[in-house]
Image (cartoon, rainbow, N blue to C red; front, side):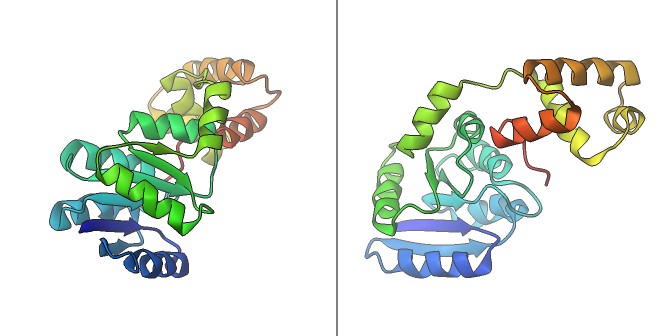
Length: 205
């Protein structure tokens, strides 16, 4: 029997998926969660074979939760199920130790096959997204540029950003300028939009 953890903040979708997966003779959904910051504790308590995580969840995003599970409950294999087919998310998921990455519109039969493959030690990635990720490449932004650009979503001024990040205004301005240039954007807002669209910025928790 393959034990499953299901973390998804949309209650109706989570319930429907749990019901459908429970119809498979070799699956057992042992725990359902609506928050990302509950994933690690549940994985430690229930020791599921496979954890199915959404990316956008309150408390903690699915990629951050995947990193924790991979580090602290290595016997649990992690799969990401998301509506966001962004190449950057796939790069981040692989770096987080995720073994499977599928879009939510995949048929349940395809998902069931993928779960069995991941539980057996394999890896599964949506083929269209894998191709897009290969053609897109990795983010051109440095970790510091990514951090500052992500923080810029919630702050209007350089001074606000500098205070939050404990950096000088000049340093923040220089990193933002570099990020804007690398992305071929005209403004900070456009740079944020482009980076988000490609999945190069983590979701705010």
